[in-house]
Amino acid sequence: QGLVQGERRGDGQHALAAQRYAALRKAAKTPADADEAALLACEAERRAHRLAAAAACFDELAKSGRDRPTRARALLHGGELRYDELGRPADGVKMFQALVQRAPDTAAGLRALSHLMRFAATDVARRREMLGWMLAAERAQPKSELADNLLLRSAELLALSGQNAARKQAIALLSRMATDHPTSAAGLVGQELRAKMHRELQQPAAEAKVLERIVGTIETSHVVASYIEPAHTRSLERLVDLYLGPLNKPALAEARLRRLLATAHAPRQVFTWLARMATLQEKAGRHRDAVTTWRQLLAEAKRRQADMARNDRRICGEEADASKRKQCLKEVAGHAALPVKELAWARAAINRLQANPGRRP
Image 1 (tube, one colour):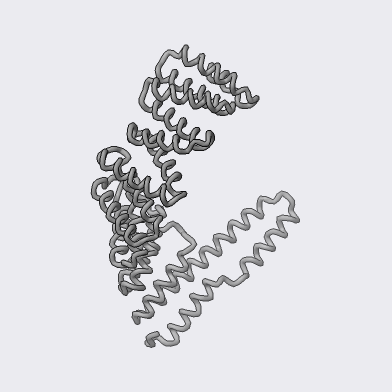
Image 2 (cartoon, helix red, strand yellow; image 1 turned 30 degrees about the vertical axis):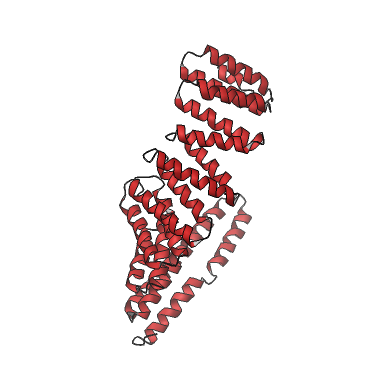
């Protein structure tokens, strides 16, 4: 009840709220309540635009907070205040760096690392300076909670340079990340960046190897485990491009297309995937398989068309006025009669293949 009375955001009495939170901190019966009230007091000072008082409040709590997570949050907010509102970004950066070093196992530490990236991304000199600091911080605490993220962020900074030497260095860091931190929550992000670096270096075989690892991780890990994971679809689509293009492995391309069709949840790209697979089969002289795949595309297009018509009719049924409902159903019937381009593709391909069953394209 005291916290509710202290929170006076609606009427703008933030200074009064800060006083009440300070009083609640003194009267708190548990350390957790005292720390939470103190944080809210500092935030109220900030909302009242008493920025110097807010900074002093956060600084005091960063030293006197009774538990470590509270001290970390106070240090983070004090840094954000200096970086974004007091016009003292250098001081904010020092506080973020101190937080990463002191509390790498906290959510505040991870957020501080994101702020350091924001600082570094704006300038080449800053990027070089921050890269050196991050690599040194990782070497100092290679087993910390943030060590994997320090490697990832360092690789991201290297990737921004656009230089091949930096890309190779990024690959080395991401390789270390995968080896030293195999259960990292950022592992997939790191592997996708590694694949991108190989792509920019025009190393298709190496890129495919990394992408296959991403696909395997998603399909077998009970932690990542979801076929709707966007990285899964992105990786499989890129593998199809690689196996059809520079690596020239059409059988593997077809296998990856089948994985896309088997695991994706009704995506819009299904028609493109089926068409690519049918074209692959036709080029290989497997006309019967190609006809089967085109018929699958035909069935999928018809199913989608029927599903859309059912939804449209249901929406029409929600019209309260009978005349509007009738007009709506008439429009839906007209939409259903429109030709669907996927149906035309499939029919034309089937007719061509059946007219020339033995001809190789």
